[in-house]
Amino acid sequence: MDMLTLLGVQIKFDQSIDSTLLLPLLQNFQPFTNWVQKFCSDCKLTKLLFQSYDLFGSRIGFMKIQVQFQIDTHIQSSVVFLKGDAVGILPIINNTYILLTKQFRAPLGRLFLEIPGGMTDGSLDFSLVALKELQEETGLHISKKSLKSLGKIIPSPDLCDEYIHLFLLEIEMSETEMKIIKEKLFGTDDEAIKIKILKVEDAFLEVEDASTLVAMSKAGLK
Image (cartoon, rainbow, N blue to C red):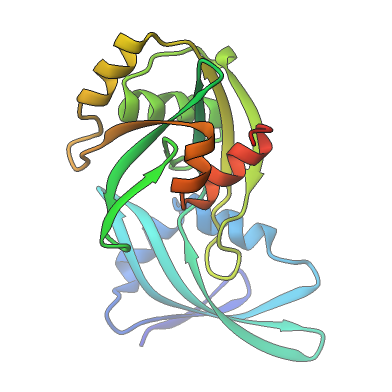
């Protein structure tokens, strides 16, 4: 198991990881840099064990680290999953319906309803990322000024660094336009996304996704 010191912290690598390959990639992995910089000033990082990482092309997409830290005199440890921020867009149609995406989520082993969204990949222009994800997953083309910020949430603070930046989009669509969009297939090459449009009251009953339910609540829907 390789070991060295980085930023004054003892760093170790799982035996399956080649540190000479990971370190150059790590310098460009913004979620790791942000996490280290934001780590509690009253806490002291004492040891990091890099357990695994996944590449998105030539860059790191996900990373799993076992962390040891000290608070006062207490030594604690935890597993941290780094992936960076994401966005979510709540499209409300005709003040009556909510547009949702329906796609297969492997961790659940089934199709899942949620609002359009995706990872920011290090971008700090969250509304621009929201526009891109909305276009990819629904085919809708809108302007930045059409989006209203609903703030951000932290869905899994016990495990992951992810913040989800939520936006509200209010649009008008005819019955014909809604029918057409529900018949199409959206997403990138490795996605197969269908659209489901529900009345607000029905969405509260059918949706299980936390970010969707929070966005609906923040938008004042009942």
